[in-house]
Image 1 (cartoon, rainbow, N blue to C red):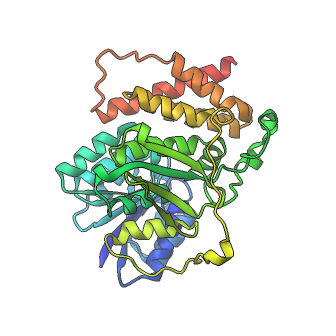
Image 2 (image 1 turned 60 degrees about the vertical axis):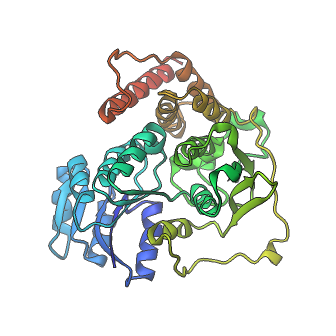
Image 3 (image 1 turned 90 degrees about the vertical axis):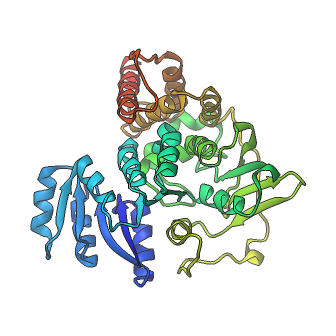
Length: 387
């Protein structure tokens, strides 16, 4: 039996992971969980599984949580609490379902403690992927992707030698507006943008999917995870979301990973790797599917994907700048401060205008990276206010 920690247990990744734990109680024990704000849901999950270690963001939340529990548990607070939790000797696997840059430090500490980390957090890999890979190697830890696209590529590449691979291909549904004329983008509301056609996700990632920024971030992640140059990473629009990744080989063969769009599949693979277990998810009947649809992405209509390739080519801190700016710009759209079509505009303006003010900046220093991330956010906020 493996001892499991879920960071961000009340989110979509956390909820999917809990279904797996419930389906296979003989394989997993829930040792620790965390959440940022949904204390009621955290208390219900903790009481249901009798989780011994809990982490919340604030001291006031810790007191509130303790009063609501029907059993005794350790309740820790904030960044230090997360570090303590993921570093516990008895922890085997840490599922990182936290969204945003706040996942970076607990991910780092989990890898430093030699854990298997099943990561669904894009920001950490984009901002500090090489650092995370290095610390994982040094401490004999495992960094396994939980995004369905990266999980599929990971599984396909296990079967092939790297010099036999011509390119990897990530699929994108295209989001809710792929067929919408570009001149209509200014009329898109946040309420419509968060309704993804195939996946149930949070507001931020749903908007990123609608702009194809999410796919751009996945390209940057793939570059880090699989040590692939950008000219060997392609994106295909596949509105059915049944094929999650493809690998093209040098002899012209193309391998595909096909499954029903349910995050339990990728999460379960990371938890049980290299084994598989049976899951209660819908199965794909190919005769009913009939045909599969693919087309090239429209980079002029969706410039966010193009921006991701550009910052990936530049390297250095540019992926960090794009990711930080996107957090601010998407939130501004959700708050109706800017329109949908202005999202790529403000991303490009930030990339063009932001300059590092710290002359002694060291890219290997996580705290400097986090400080730089905050600087970029403040810069983008000022751009939006001025506009």
